[in-house]
Image (cartoon, rainbow, N blue to C red):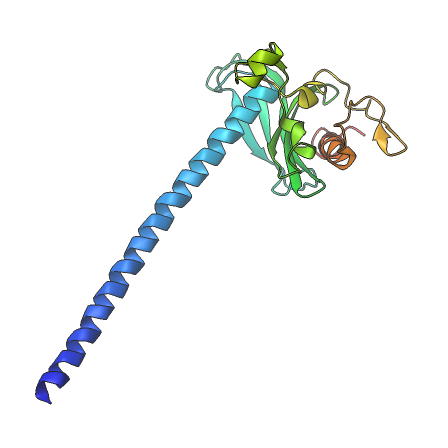
Length: 220
């Protein structure tokens, strides 16, 4: 009987040690995972900034948070300069901001680059989407060059710098030129069978730039 009484406390202690060790391991794993996720998100953000404002210097982006904002959930946008931020002779080449639109099966998030006056779209980059494969997901499709034989054997060469054709068409357009005619934008080549996705991306771009011009640049 005494042996059983001695065994029970030892079992409790062993279980407590195991639980504590497991808790510490899970905590450490969570911390490491979260940090990696944060770093990858930051890298993705910087890649998007370089895409939408290619004329800006890699070290020429400065994050700014607007006191009041409706163009982004956190009010964050970026000033972009032609030289590193440490260079006093740097010149502003544009702004980058983030917007979102309700797609067919997901929220589509997009980064938009505009000129210093917010008049010209320098480029857009879809940063998050879970649209229907083969339809809405084509918003990130890249046109390829090559023969049918190349395509069958996975040798098709991607054109240019592999910028998705759908996103490339926004580059250079005036921010006030996006006009809806019925259920479509007249100056946007839509995705086949994915009107909702097409409009979601365009709506996100239009709304983000419009609100940014009004709230930050104070242009109506």
